[in-house]
Length: 53
Image: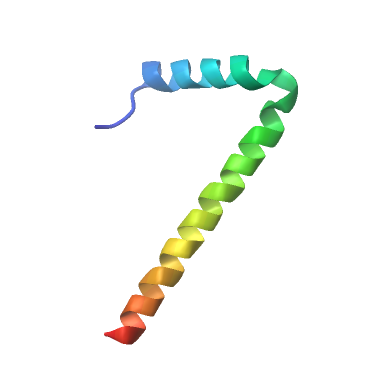
């Protein structure tokens, strides 16, 4: 089930309330790094599976 615009806007407002405008850029940067690291890990896992087959 995809996330619609209303749900995304609500999530962004909640994040803004929880972390404040000052910390928001750092939180988003850290989140982006985490997602990139997760994707990299998935790609490495796929490569290891291909080698074992």
